[in-house]
Amino acid sequence: MSFDADKRPPRVILPTDAINPGGTHDPASADSLARLVAIMARLRDPLRGCEWDRVQTFVSVAPYTIEEAYEVADAIARGDMPALADELGDLALQVVFHARIAEELGAFDLDQVLTGIADKLERRHPHIFGDAEVSPGWEAIKAEERTTAADQSALAGVALALPALERAAKLQQRAARTGFDWPTSEGPKAKIFEELDEIAAAPPEAVEEEVGDLLFAVVNFARHLKTDPEEALRKANRKFERRFRMIEQAPGFSALTLEQQEALWVAAKRGG
Image (cartoon, rainbow, N blue to C red; front, side, top):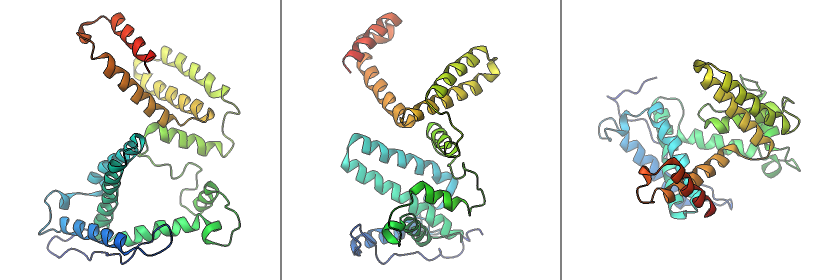
């Protein structure tokens, strides 16, 4: 169903209330959400809206959604609360943006999005909102939900858009629940050396695939060590950036020999 630009925009869902963690109605939160929804409707108005906003699609907005999620994570990592408040607003905008596009297409609206996640949270916490005395476990509930889905694979629902390291870890975790896993960390550790040998022996056209296998093995090893590979690499990136920024301040850094640059690097490592 396509959007007819000659007609007025579809109705805007304006929530009348919101629920805070204490379980009471919060009109202020509802008003803020309603205002954001109304602003997005105006921006998407085919006659009076913003030229950029009104031509966007799910596909064109998706990269911004991913970027905003990372900016939220970055603000959290830096402990910057004002930035976190700002970035959470940007992320909320992405939800409203996608929901507005969907409503115009007649697919769903923001009310369905919010109702869906509220229903899911209640369903996955039967010990809080239901009659269960103890939680059966988040993953157990998700696994039960997958039994009614079209794709019943243990790997179903692992998003393609996840960062590759994170997706590799999730795929391995799902496979491990079926018993398909190394019994100890020695298995993936040996696999790393095996993949290094295969890279060395690979023809040029096969190197990329073998490097991928190596990275997959490293993720598996990290998982067995109870280490999040995505977070580990983020920290390594930050450490490299911090140290490189230190050494590149040396006079004539670019003209130094590799040995001289390495000496600066070793000194930077000693300093943290």
